[in-house]
Each structure stands twice: as C-alpha cells, then as structure tokens.
Length: 207
Image 1 (cartoon, rainbow, N blue to C red):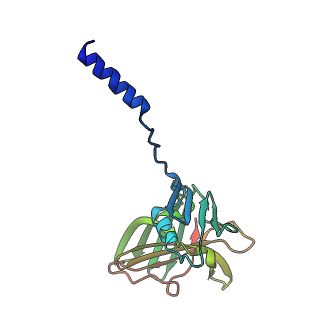
Image 2 (image 1 turned 180 degrees about the horizontal axis):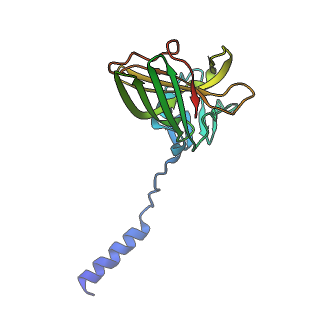
Image 3 (image 1 turned 90 degrees about the vertical axis):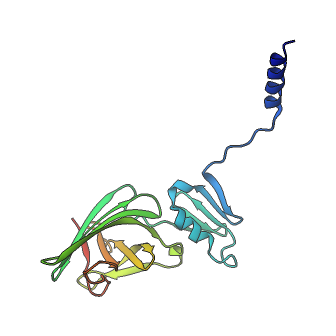
C-alpha cells in the first residue's frame, strides 16, 4: 500500500477516536465557585466581576437568570425596568446659565449608553459619551430623589467611573405616574463648567 495512503488512513482513525473537546459557551458560565450566569450578554462584564466580589460569608451562591438575581437559592430580586430595555430617552433641564441634555439607551439588564451635553450659555460647553452600570449591590436597598415639588420618587442609579472622573445617572418615575421619565445627574470633570451635583442642579425631564 502506498505510504501516503496508509498515513492518511491512520490520521483519520486517530481523529475519530480522539476525545471531543467541548466548545466553550458564554452561557451558563461559572465565574467562580458560587456565581453562575445563564447568559453573560444580558449583563456587563464589570457588573458581573463586581458581583463576584460580594462577601462569600453572606452570599454563598449567586445566580443571574434573565432579569432575576437569585441569592443563596431563595432570595430573588428582579433588575429594575427603568429605563425600559431597548428604548432610548432624551431628558433636558436648565438652571441659571447651565442647560443639560441627557440621552440614554438601555442596552441590557445592567447597562445604559449615555450622551451628556452641558452648556453654560455665553461661555462654554462639553459633550461626554459612555456606558454606565447598576451597582452590584443594588438589591440591598433602593434609592430615591425628589422632584421640583419636593415629592420623593424611586430611582435606578447607573455609574461610570474612570480615574477620578465620576458620572452618576439616576432615573425614575413619580409614584402612580409613568408619563415622563425623570433624571438627576452627578458629574465632575466638566472642564470649565462646575461639577454637577444633586444639590446644585434640578431634575431633568423627558422630552
């Protein structure tokens, strides 16, 4: 028998008998011995990494399944649905000589895309884009803000921090009213424009 043909037969038989290596999937990943993620595309990598750092003494088992976070096999929390998944929102506000336009788009259960434009009339303006995540400990307690009438409403808070620059976007609706999305902004690193805080700038309103 031709040596080349014989070698080909041996190679084919070896491949057939070799143990199959399973392809790795992004689904059902075990990020550590106690954290399981059904579909990692539903959450940001940063959120999952921070969740994995939660104290093991209290959070012995953590599961991410669709819109649910399950702790220790029994305590179940649903991710906030504000802003709505897959939707884009534009909010604006003005206080004194400063006007802010905020555009947000909910990408998945943990993350928004945002575009912020801050204008100080007659002086300067800045534009900043990025992605912000819900904090990993969101399930431990909710946040709230007040509208211009002083009425409190629940908010979902998203953070983006790079070095010493912080952007925090807080979004929610008034109780018993889903007509307009409301927002508050915390942001530094604004060039010549002052830092924006909860105290020195009012509520942004959906347009």
